[in-house]
Image (cartoon, rainbow, N blue to C red; front, side):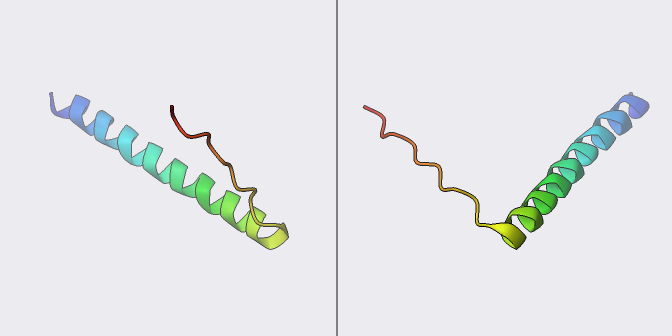
Length: 45
């Protein structure tokens, strides 16, 4: 059971690190050029 838990934990950490890395790259790329467009969602009826 322990190896399975380690694999799941490693996958969770890897996914979080990957998301943070993508957000950092996106933020630095958009901030240096132009601010990201504001997405307006219609109000639910």
